Length: 119
Image 1 (cartoon, rainbow, N blue to C red):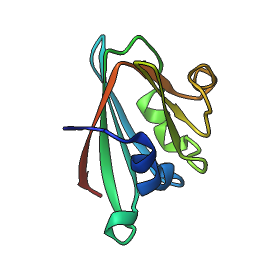
Image 2: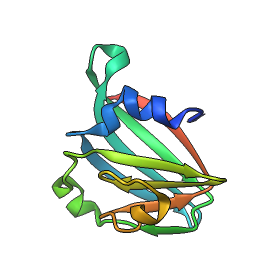
Image 3: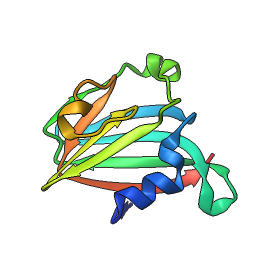
């Protein structure tokens, strides 16, 4: 896993995972979660890739049941917001950390890493 050093570049590279797939959520521990998404990578001629996101220092979350992940509307992609030392992940267009709490699924954490995989 690699840390995400520039969130805006990361989201731009994958077009915020718009029209992608929300594949899985795994609770690794009470303060660590893994989310797997798939989307198109502009750095690879828009090939489809899987992306595993590791959230550490989780302080709050609203998760979805695995059986409902395929029903998540990903037309607006995901948002990752950084404010001070906190990060927030949410489905759709979120503009601030408090706004992510209105998302279908959200995670508030201290750090975020990623790992690319095959589609």
